Image 1 (cartoon, one colour):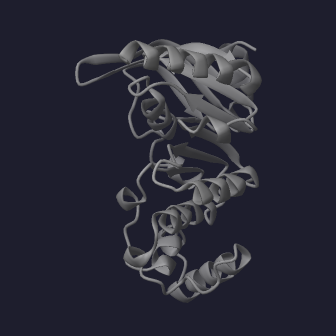
Image 2: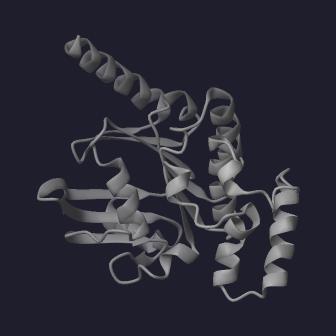
Image 3: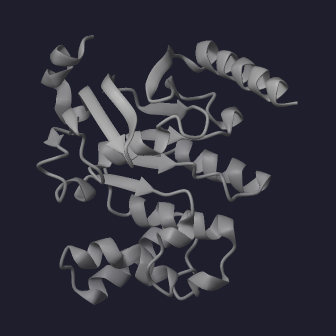
Length: 243
């Protein structure tokens, strides 16, 4: 399906149309066009390939210099303030995302920001934590949590808002193996569309689609079975050249 035709379905997808972007005088994207409709999409690419910038374009955190990005029917350059109500963003480092001293305050921030009374917010937070097996976490101090627990708090803070799309930028980077496996399992069970950038290829195998970015361009685009072996081989070749 071409990008123009995909615009008819833009309420349930992300449409990137002829996008150009420069950052700090460097060209990141030029003429980039994608139609992102699959339920689970993985982004791979070496450092500097454009994965994080693409996620930020989709969320409206940065506007394109040219072209158009439509996220769930919202033009990211014009409707950036509306996007957080429907699109969650999970950053690589939870310490860069967490704002409040306790788990309950952090998870309830979005609800409070919608104008719900504080008592109602805490009722919903407690019920939500119970549902996810964290019923006693509400009063816990965030700075006493492990890295995996902090990342889970950030994910729960996104999920409680019931977004239609969740963007994740290297969410496994600070987690040990056990926490990566547990966190990946939670992601598999999410109902919203997920677009995930990660170097952890073993946890991308069940995605519906993999997009390999290379120097701001799409080098390969297809199923995990098609793309991940090619990307592994390329990384191994680059590693060999460094030795």
